[in-house]
Length: 179
Image 1: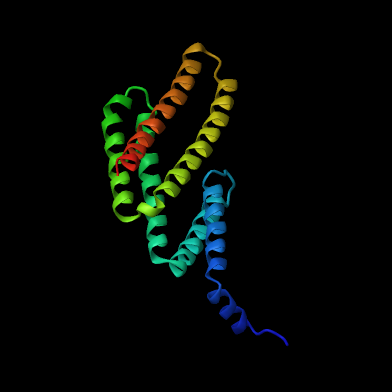
Image 2: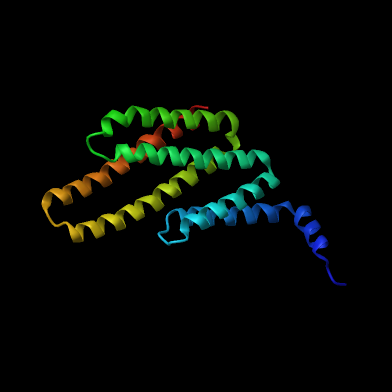
C-alpha cells in the first residue's frame, strides 16, 4: 500500500522523538554555521535556527523558550566579551560579566532547572568552538605581525578570553550547586 504525504505527516506527529531529533540536527547546523566563514554561513545559520526553533516549539514550548534564552544569552555574552578581551577594559567590565552570569544562572534555575546542565554543556561547547576559531585567527595574525608587542597583545587576548569564560561559568556553576 502506498503512503500518502498525509500519512507521512501523521507518522511525524505521532513520533515526537523524530521532531526532537530533527530540531537538534537543525540547531547543531545553526551552531556550526555560526562559527563558519562561508559566504552563505549567516543565511544558513539563521534559516536552520528558525527551522529548529519551530520544531522545538512543536515538540515542547518550554524547550523553544529555552533555546531562545540560550541564543540571546550567547549573543549578549559575545557582546560583553568584545569588551573584556580588550586588555584595558577587562577589569571595568568584569563585574558586569559576573552579574550577567548570575542573572542567566538565576533565570535558568528558576524557569528551566531540568535543562540547567544542558545549558552548561551548550555554552561550554560554544566557548570551545569560539576558542578554536580565535586560536586560528591569532596564528594567522602572528604570521603577519612579527613584532614583540603585537605577539604579546595576541597572547594577552587569549588569556583574557579564558578569564572571561571562567568568570561567566563560575557563577553559573555556583548557582547550580547552591540550588
